[in-house]
Image 1 (cartoon, rainbow, N blue to C red):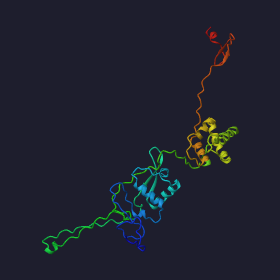
Image 2: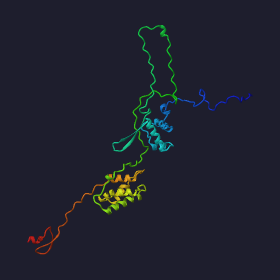
Image 3: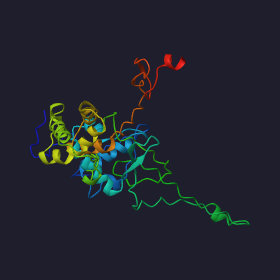
Image 4: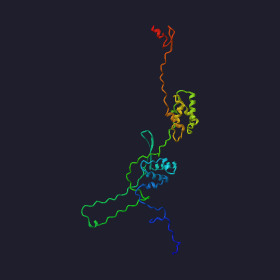
Length: 321
C-alpha cells in the first residue's frame, strides 16, 4: 500500500479537462442546433445597462414577433416589481434597443407600439467578416512549379461561444409591432384638467338649483369612496351641475353620468368629474308642441243656452232658424 503524499497539490473539485485557465470562469460550450438566440457582446457586456435591463433585453430578443411585453405581463412572469421592470425598459429605450410609439387605431383608440432592435438604434455595428476571393487563373500555360504549389487549407470554423464576437450581420425582417398589454385591462381616464372657463354654466341664477348641485357633488363619495371632492372643488364644479339641472336632467341622471363606468385606477377625481360634466353635457329639451284646446263656453244671445265657440254669438239651433 502506497504512502500518502501530504505535500501534493489536491485536485480541484469539478475541474474541467482541456482548460488552461487557472482563474476566473471556465466555459463548457455545447453547440446549439435549435431553440437558441444570438446575442451581441454590445448588449451582454454593456457598460451602462443594469443586469436587469440586460436580462430583460435577452428575454425580449428571444420572443417571437407579436409576443406581449407589457409591464404588467412581465411583472406577472418574473419576480421583479412593475417599477423595476419599468426602469429597465426605460434603460433599454435610452440605450437605443427599445422604441415605444403612440399610434391611433381606426376606431380612435390610442395604443402603444413597442419595437425592439437587436442592434442599438443609431449605434455602430461590428464590421462584417472579410470574404476570401480566389484569384482568377491567368491566361496561358503556367510554370510547373507554380502548379504544384500546395494551397493553404481553409481554417476550421470555430465553435460558437457565449463570449464570442458579434457574428456576421444577417438581413433582418421588418420589426413587427408588439402589443403592450398582456390582457384587456380597463385603462384609467387620464384627462387634462379642464379650464374653469370651459365648464358649462347655467343661463339663469337659481340659488335652489345651485344648492342642489352642491349637495349632489358632496354626496358622490357615498356611491364610490374614490370620488372625494374638496370644498373648493365642489364650489368650482357646482355651476356645471346646475347647468345640467337647468336642462331638465334630474339628479339621478347626473349622478349616474358621473359614477358609471369608472376606471380601475382613479388618480384625480375632480378632473374626471369636470371632464364628464363638460363632455357629456346634454342638449336642452325641445319645446313640446302645444295642442289646441276646446273653444270656451259662450251664452246664446237669443235662447241663453250655453255652447262652445271662439267668439260670442248665437247657438247653432238659433242660427238655423
